[in-house]
Image (tube, rainbow, N blue to C red):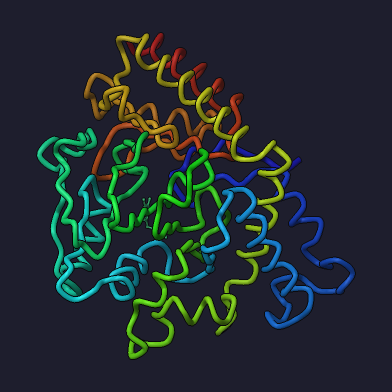
Length: 362
Ligand SMILES: Cc1ncc(COP(=O)(O)O)c(C=O)c1O
């Protein structure tokens, strides 16, 4: 029998088993074509149908309004750190950004080379262990846009209520919490996310953009750097990551089969509550993040600040079939990424292991 572990990795991360099984079933002969989706022309009738269904599935699952375009693009979420300012920055209107961790640091790194920008708030002085309060956020009224990261994958913080940016378009990097909770897309100018957490395998990113914003860019930008190229060509200007897009379609179908994002969100809250409660109830484990900022997706914990015990925990958990629990190298500790594909039983198994480990080492 195939051996499967419980995968708590931050990304690439677990994919629903039903999706992998469907992909396996169709791997050699997709829908009677006698070939794999991997081998198929991106211009074929079959693939056209796949990409259209992927888009329709995402639109339905996120209730994306009609005045928003969806594009599939390579370069991961990281390319968007440059592409967003290249397309959305307007001269004399500095980009504003709320600095909450490693992924805004990287976005700021690109802004330094590309545009004027201003940090509208920062929690760097607190090691990013919290998010700024409304009174700390100072947004320029004439900013080109405001950039935030909805869920900070490394430290484990997540915006519960998004900052209000008025007429300034809100741009959100949702790489690590897209499709994990219901959001009102109309509140955003642009949303982007790398696929490799809640959308599918690595190799693509999704950009959801209000149509009018895509028209801001100069037509002198490299063609592959303009959102309008992807919009006009339905993400088929060049060869897209076809197999990744196919798996994304299966993930969209799976989300629908679970009752949609509403049901997924309910489950995610239950999973996170169970895990944070187990941490809070124990004198052995600590969460470095105050309850109001805690991520439902990336649960970071420490063991009495003992790196030795943390490393032992990660190794023994791995041996017990609980994989990917090592914290990010910048944050240390233990991190359980409990994305959509992990069910409540995965969390229960982790808690069982935590209790056993505490008994032996506490
Ligand atoms: C919030 C966030 N933004 C951006 C990235 C970078 O994504 P990519 O590797 O697809 O460029 C990650 C990766 O983990 C992330 O968690």
